[in-house]
Length: 267
Length: 316
Image 1 (cartoon, rainbow over the protein chains, first blue to last red):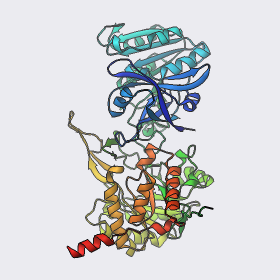
Image 2 (cartoon, rainbow over the protein chains, first blue to last red; image 1 turned 90 degrees about the vertical axis):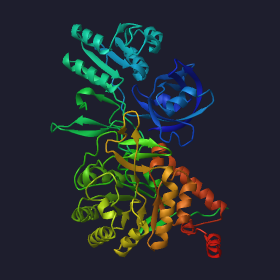
Image 3 (cartoon, chains in turn green, yellow; image 1 turned 90 degrees about the horizontal axis):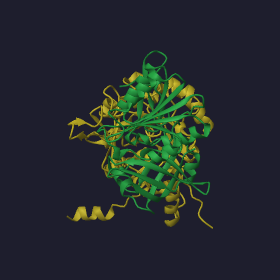
Image 4 (cartoon, each protein chain N blue to C red; image 1 turned 180 degrees about the vertical axis):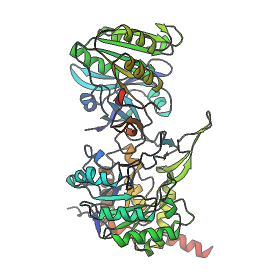
């Protein structure tokens, strides 16, 4: 059951000129959230922005073992993300959640390969924790524009996640797209692998394509323009295959945001 | 000892526990919100617009935010009336919701057929006729934009149902009050207004419309003063109840519509922002009633005082 919390900003860490990690005192949501679920966020009470915006929950915060809040990884693209970038400790951010269908973590001996593009890193911290708990061997393929926009590498490494990094400018890791090393490794892997992806839709489509090519299932977290996050407005639809060979529009807020990529029609 | 506060609202033969209704197209089929909200706390849930058959709606992008508002061009995606009755209505009955079903047709016969089908279904409390969706080409709004079209569809539906019939009017006409009058003359039990204002937004970098449908309907606080004016005009033109909507986000907004002449109000866009808005609106209205020593909220309807303005008008 989703709840709406007027959450105080605990701290706001700027990672670059565009990226920040904002910590919110919303323990009720943090305690209930599953990896891949999201919250609908609105900073301030004004009419600009009017609607909330969806964010994957990034980290669950704990204070002496007690869940104390959550963080969001945000990249400045519009009014809401600008306000989240500029928010200071004590500001209030409305936070509605948890919402949506989560990832399904796999158990050993299957391996988990996570593929993140830019701000698409967001759902993979909570997924990593769920996978570590299961003892599942985990790899993160992580691509960004440059090395300055690859974040939390130590966080993932310290939890035993194997990192494969790519940048568009070649400043860190391999130059080029994150799907290139993914395809190379899928080609050579012989075990059971579940692929998880979050990032720009062309990346998700490429991940779905190469995963299927090498006989692996993939779960993708999509981002569509969302009005309410509750299934009320029908704005965030994505085409999903149906039994008749056609497709129909499914609301990504309640049918997703995580989908088995084999079910999606890429438009 | 406080007053006993009566928030009920009468729409034809239908008595609502309070005047707050979830607006069509803004609340799915109602069941989506049942985990978060007790649907009995709403005066009524108005269903997403239903055709006889399922519809896919428009491709994304379907919404875009604009100053204090939003444009939508969903295109009436829906499961159709038969699946609604089979899959949604039993759940809504179990939840104790008061169900107003919004129906849309491409032809007059389709409205009649929908009204027939829904009149036989258990748990349907009223019909709202969607003759005002700006986002689809066929039917619907062509009825709502003409006096004869409005009269004919209301008359035809009234012939086949005993349910209260509430045509939902478009603001995209020269004189909405005359459309309301045509609906009343045809036997409508109430009118609801306003549907969204036809509008558009363009991305200047790509020079492309921001909606796949190019144009869409504007809703939200941006339209509220226009909607209040239209409710006021309709109230003066007809004796049947007027159900007001357009950008209501607070109890004050809802009360403004009621003073202008709305017997009940619908909330749409604000529910997207705050799905828990209903209890806040009720609390705010109860505070107002207590402050104004008012025991029946219905006594507020149409009580706008224009005496000073009228005097000025006469003397100038």
